[in-house]
Image 1 (tube, rainbow, N blue to C red):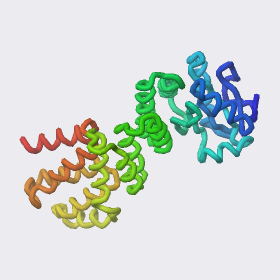
Image 2: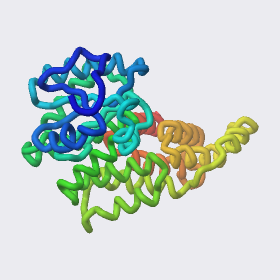
Image 3: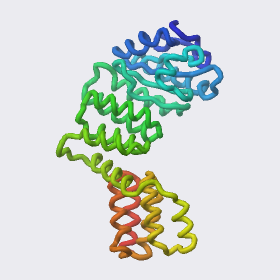
Image 4: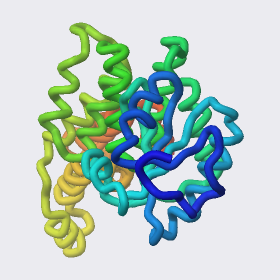
Length: 304
């Protein structure tokens, strides 16, 4: 055993599982990940969720029969590597491939999600087919973003762009991560990496989302809500509220507000509500639930 102490939360070490720490991190994780994917479980003896996650990780790693390796690190006894990786809460899990973190998550996940995580990671391992590697990283990044793990998503997209610097989906995904975190300048910078003339629905979607965010800076929702309480037919206040909601990424609520206007006055302000709905559908993406549900609701109103 190198570095840390035995992790008593799990079911013991095996040929695919070991404890490590500050002293062994380079060999056990960075170097080892050049030959097979390495999952790192950051834990502590006092952490309740760790006692749920670690046994499930061990079970699925053993079931993978060598496709991946699990390294467990007690952050109390090995603070240096946890600080370097900016571990802020535990359990935190990082996946390394070719010496780089490619994905991760925080908290205890259901065993089915852990199994899917390991299966995708094994496909993205060193020496994997290039196209399969890229698709696996895209899937990892998308799932991390969906789970709200923006850091893990950003790492996966960045790793993908090292493999394929002009990958439109990775550029769009990373830009959307920065947009979700409120960093509009960085999102725009990432979008500028797209090749000139690149055509991709996801790039168009993020550009539309960035446009929405810039069109309506952060506002005091209470101001518009108070105006609507005083006059529910104040369409201008409801429209301004919808713009602010969209700029904050609350697209479902923005759609609700705009459909409310459209239902009562289709031609208000030259059809502004419908035009803004189209912008939001594009920003959400054509295959998103926001766009699909919103378009159905809009069509129902148009033909009612």
